[in-house]
Image (cartoon, rainbow, N blue to C red; front, side, top):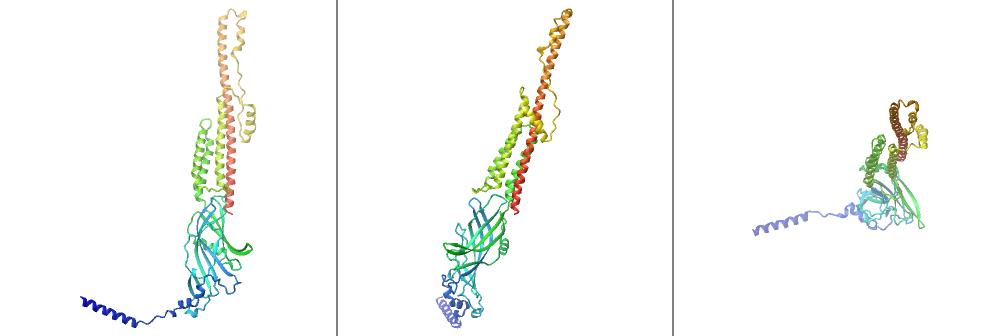
Length: 459
């Protein structure tokens, strides 16, 4: 067994020596990549060298971006979260070669940390960028650098939520160097605003709450501390998709308002309309408390939708007060002493009835009430000519007194019924007038609200 192992070890050593002797030496110095990095090792290894031969010449840096996602908008904190890809292009004058000298090598990837790159900064940044870092960038034979990197930007944005949920927001992303002035770096645009917008709309996959309208890009020079600074401003214009808020906020509130409007057709003298409206008002308040989480909480101003809910609540309170007023008028029909005041009767039948085109029925004269105590027939009993028929006269007098009492009672009931009819008629006229006034206020409010939303949303 030992001899077998010894023989195998000898054969393995013989094979290894033979392979070593027969394999030619590899000359890595002839590789085009090795020769390239050996040639430009002073440039590639010096990341502090600004890539211009004349130190007075600024570096021309062209940038563009593609918006990939609108992550979210915080109306309370005025924060916009976006995810973009930033592309940078500049020329390193020390890194120019002829591809024929390196076996046709025209494009090389270089580590980002081993070569000069601009210190671009988003001025609206309020949180640290947590996006992944790209370790390499490309350089072509003309010296042009292409550096692409993703950015998760959490930036400040002045949001106007007055037209929520039909609002259109414009947020600004300003990119510029952190330390280099315009004498060192001059920024330019690699693409037009139309090209940036078109590419961004193609890249956005999530059909969330926000829709991108356009991206306007421009370059500018601004002064600070006596120095000129170059920067590029991207203005993101986006529109909120309001379907979620329409289904969960506006439409349920509108349904409750329609129910409140239809409740005016309940006969107030037969059904307790006030209890129904009070229940409806309580339900609307509960709905507002539940939907409070969906509304933007912003100290900068109250949105139109907040005004809409407040006005709807106020209209429902006004509707309840109208029912209380009409119920108070109808309560007078149960009173035995109150008559319709003259001024109320004059205002109702002379002005309000004509205003709502109501023709009241012809009024009847109030029946006269006679006191049975003042019947003159009792004085005829003592006539000397009627002594023989005293018994008959007494019977007739008693019958006449009973008939007068019955007539007085009927006149009193007729007077009471006439008074009730007047109060009911006045209540009906005022109910019709206040209902039409309420309907007019409701229509005017909704027309103004819808007009404001539509004009802003289609602007």
